Length: 155
Image (cartoon, rainbow, N blue to C red; front, side, top):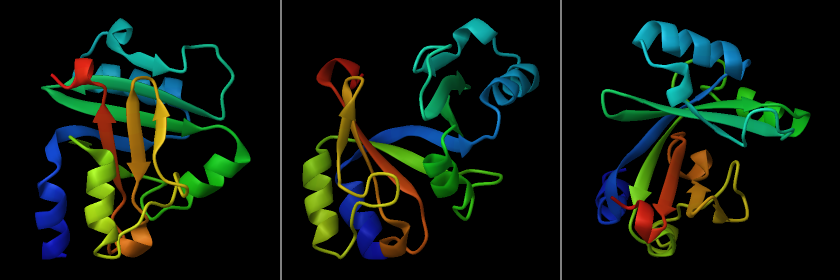
């Protein structure tokens, strides 16, 4: 596992977010607003509220740390996400911002670590970013997401 940390560390810029799987996105966001005292209008939804999608996301920050709440709505994603070791409660995954997602994957591949899980076919691009989940079977059970943001979002 030390080899993984050293290899991946070369590509990591900063934490991107901590993700939680939630059964009811609106209730989870309402709870977060109450607990942390954040304004409901500061929460970003993807897709936008009211849109029909197989999975809904809400993003917000507390104390400089970004959170992602994920509500799987169709049976396929409910099965995948709720049956994960941390699917029913607690932190689901840690996402890392990386400079070069393909380069990071190539170095990880050399160590037998592969994409998988939610993105079994590799890197997915949407919303000005590229993202991939690593297969927990190749990471010692850890659910890790890598995200490469477009240049304008790197900060």
